[in-house]
Amino acid sequence: MKPLLGEKFIHNGEAVKLPLDFVRQLSLKVQQERPESRCDKVMDTLSGCALCLPNLTQLSSCCCCREHRPPLCIEIKPKCGFLPSSRHVTKEIKNQVCRFCMHQHFKLAHGKWKRLSRYCLITQPAISILSVSIQGGECIYSCKDDADVLQDLDELAQHLRPYFLPSGSLMNGHQSSKVVLNELIQVIVSALLSSWDPRKTHLSEGRVRCEASLLHRDLLRNTNHCLPKDCVLDKILGTQMLDNLDIEGLNPLFKRVEQHLQDFPKERSSLQIDGPYSHSFLEKIQKCPTEDDGSIEYAVGKVHQYRVAMTAKDCSIMITIATCGEEDGLDQSLEIQPSKPRFTYSVSILDLDPKPYDSIPHQSRLDSKIVNHYLRSTLPNNQELANQSVFLGWDREGEDCTLVFHPV
Ligand SMILES: O=P(O)(O)O[C@@H]1[C@@H](OP(=O)(O)O)[C@H](OP(=O)(O)O)[C@H](O)[C@H](OP(=O)(O)O)[C@H]1OP(=O)(O)O
Ligand SMILES: Nc1ncnc2c1ncn2[C@@H]1O[C@H](COP(=O)(O)OP(=O)(O)OP(=O)(O)O)[C@@H](O)[C@H]1O
Image 1 (cartoon, rainbow, N blue to C red):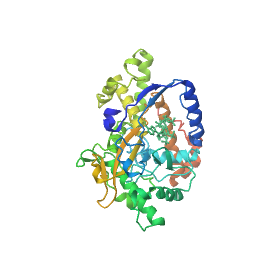
Image 2: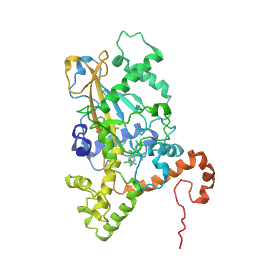
Image 3: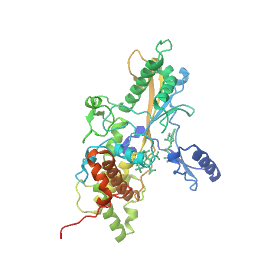
Image 4: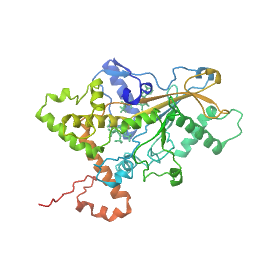
């Protein structure tokens, strides 16, 4: 992922061995802390291996030590940043509404989420804050399912006040909360959009407006869709866009690979179906023909590209910021306005586990379920269709099992 997402955002980590007993105890502790919706996840307690990474809630050049204020760490899961433009897409709604918005309805119906979020990366310039922690691990804000969001944000603002409002400020109550949160968001956005060369900007390709976004239309109209070249969001978006066929275009290629592996099982390893994720794997991704020439190389290249794109669609960004003085003279410092505090920051990408090859059929089924559920549950014109859906071939789970008659 490093060559694709950029050296500076990714930490290799080091594979380390851990005593199995320690891992078992850790797993028990972690399991107790998991929110209900994530209790199906378990830690791998059998391999005895772990990845040792630097603590990304801290800054390496710690000018903040002088400041007496611990750094703030903000974690964001951006999810997919574009609408498909593949000719293989069969359902028009996928060109209008992003998967994240459609998936939310599906998750709500199945009890995974308790409410719809206003977050939609496709259309909005705003940032939805997922979690903020202070160095030392104290979490001061986290997107909880059933919490009172406004009250939580007020509490968050109280914590952040010393970072963003001068100590003598007379502002208080709701007004100051608003100012403080706006300042935080400005700093986050600046870190997300910062690149080594601020003059380089480019327009993101493809359709950029998700029609299901809950954000106000006026806000959407004024949105500028430029991303500075090489900023973290640009790198992630570019990698996500390796999925240019959509799962609907990829599925037949996956079947081609499956057939090939049945005929030539020994080629599984040279085609690097299960890795290793080496230089030659990267070459298969980068040198994949642009048009389908019917070859196995094309099919494998597209499958690999899709898996890498899926990883980039599910990664997190960690931004750590600390206030600093002018005398710190750091390379990566943000000055939002000359009269306001200066910040130093670091931006990293994490959770880059490769998505397994075997998950592709699941992704294909899930895609139909999400789209069918969305069409049935949200579009008023489809209400009648929804009532008849069982007869038309949609089962209760929203899976498309339509019986298609072909002319003979
Ligand atoms: O399918 P999505 O878009 O909901 O993404 C899943 C994530 O959901 P969320 O980002 O919370 O909405 C999901 O996150 P959570 O566990 O719900 O926090 C996982 O990251 C999942 O990956 P994997 O299947 O465990 O490898 C993710 O699954 P895939 O990326 O494999 O689809
Ligand atoms: N290097 C790091 N420094 C600080 N915090 C980290 C670091 N790596 C991960 N975290 C925190 O731990 C969380 C879980 O990490 P990650 O998503 O990589 O693990 P995971 O194995 O996918 O978790 P799960 O078992 O829940 O699926 C991250 O969302 C982040 O909050």
